[in-house]
Amino acid sequence: MKTYQHLFFDLDHTLWDYDRNVKESLAELYTKHRLEDWGIPSFEKFFDSFYEVNFKLWDQYNVGKIDKYHLRKERFPQIIAHAGGQSHSPIGELEEDFLHFTSSKSHLFPYSKEILSYLKKKYKVHVITNGFEESQQKKIKSSGLQGYFDLIVTSETTGFRKPDPRIFQYALDQLEAEASVCLMIGDNPSSDILGAQRAAIDQVFFNPSEKKIDLIPTYEIRHLQELELLL
Image (cartoon, rainbow, N blue to C red; front, side):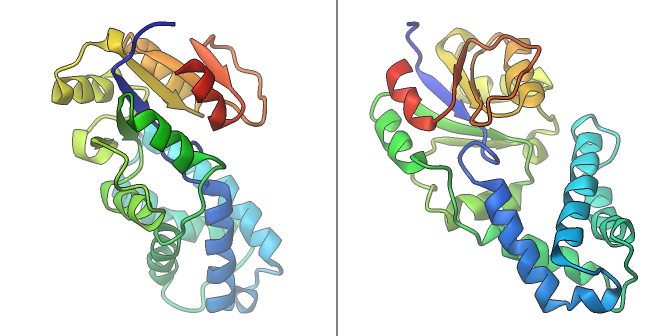
């Protein structure tokens, strides 16, 4: 096993349980705004439309086709239309409430705090995320993770998005560290694994669903506790 000094974690889908937190937030949104009156027949239809639209927009954001403003401006109008509904009130309120609800959620993947406590005794632990600065900082605070990280790097603050190697280089420059002593831990084959490979940083592919990917990561785990065996 190589000797590492710095560990970079992705946040959403790796530590912060995006799917659970977002589903709870969307349920609150559906109830608060009475979206059945907008012509959306069920929460399930709203939920499915969110995932269909949201990930397409994030894919566009991650490759630089749209910016933060357009992602947030277009998200819920497209979701409502996809679900077959029509707005009955200012649709911008949905986006505002969604951001508030989600950033207040605290659900983490099993063993997140335990593994961070274990690793923090041996390494410098950081975050590199494509999420937006304000919302990611709120998620970290709401979920009780703020004491674990020495450096938090977002695509918004750097102007670069994973898998662009420049976001990793920004982190290396801030830490005055070499890529060879760093390790990236994340769930996304493209942004986390490919991005780290482009920056010559070793990777841990967090893969709880055991999905098949074309890339070959340095390491692969199904559960965060497995990091104890690696590190």
